[in-house]
Image (cartoon, rainbow over all chains, first blue to last red; front, side, top):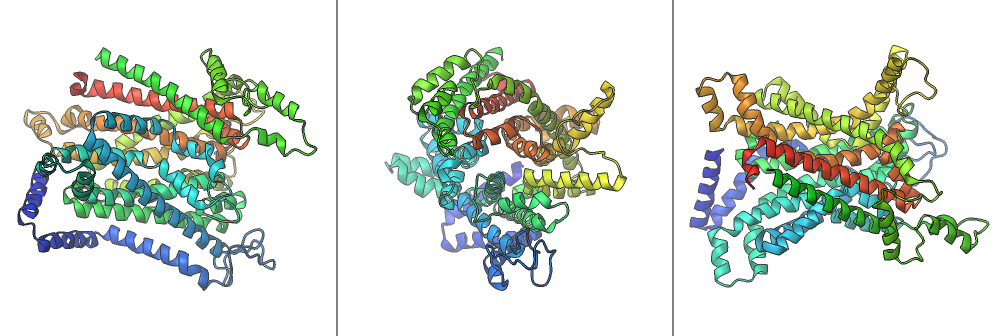
Length: 308
Length: 327
């Protein structure tokens, strides 16, 4: 552990000393190479790209729409016309699953980006400013962690039910930044004592600029990793809410509502929820492989402990 | 050390008060019990609606702070008030709390111990078959939402029953209604109901803890003090348990408090899917019914559980790690 820390510091010191654009480029090239050497990460990337592609192109390939009923084929198993079978009222399960996948992917991605951005901002302010601001923010974090966010979102569902799904994104974002902000705060606290940040402070650079120009760029790798890993958590949160009926509302569908509707008769008709469930697990799994791949690429020292 | 624990205890009590207050205000602003009666056909006279709402102290025409004051004056005497049908919430609470606690306590104990064991063995046998298969399994479990896992286990249990021809796994309720037999047979019957729901919430925690435990154990395994322990003549097993595990397990205590919050959310799904009338299932139905007092009671219950588990985690940390004691 000690040696890896030393070598990372050495690399950083060299990058700082040379300060050449080519040096920085080679570092990103190095990270890219390390990432693509990781088989699981590449597998995850392929799966996520495939999921996005099929979710948005798939509906054009199939002749059915997610709100259309085919009254001649009720509750049919997968066939050539209906690739994933049909439901009790003749809706094509493939079209439904693709639509649900779209919703879950978009919501997951947006929530992860927003909540990670929020936690980067809040965490770096708390860690850098310190003192009472830090105490206050950490107290709010503790409080928000006491009541499970799923329960709060269920209570608040009246505010976004029957309205735009974007409000659901806002809700999920507000209750999903706490853990990451703690990590960012820890980093900001250690960066705060570094010479270049101190120099900027003593030269009178305002706090706002120091955070934006010195802290955040130096935490970029951790923030990217956190954002990737948060996508999985956000998808799970959205599908959980939708499963209980407090998330995405009919007539729109998400993977969560599809699983909830499908499980009623699923013992005899497994195709009703199987495809939605499988694409949900596969997507979250792929996203976590990508996140771990990023982490290993940015910090090879942790590769030893993170690899499968 | 005693002072530290007392300070933490005081902090916990303050947090419970704030969390339940926050829960009360959130529930009062978001839920709209009057709506239950307004849409009725034939319409109910406003006076009757007000009477029903006033009985439970949830009338939105009474100022919120006044309602909160009444609620607090009851809660400090240990009375959570009445639900919308006029039933005492304390009775419902007393019935359901044991259902949920059984699920949560067994689930978290099984999850934490098995998870830590799996993590330690995986770290010691890094990249061996055990490590690889359990790591892959953990990745899958962490990517599977609790509700999907519960459903799959339920179907798996039903298939298993069909295959062996008798009902081994029960998938509905806590025990068979109208069950007759000796107390031992009753216990077995309860166990048969308990296995699948407990697995549903424990498997996720096992995966969660095993990943973190594996990482922290790997860090410890390569540390100097473990080499010293071996050099002074301890066997591998002795050094692992006495000097390795003790250090590697202390970061887990922090995760325990956070993991417990996830577990409670998971219990809401598991109870709904397996037809257990516990706190989680109560919460879901109470929100659908706009029952503010019941919702607040459940929120208070979860905040107490999360904070108590956080407090216990801190106490364990103090016992394990002498450096914390001096704080």
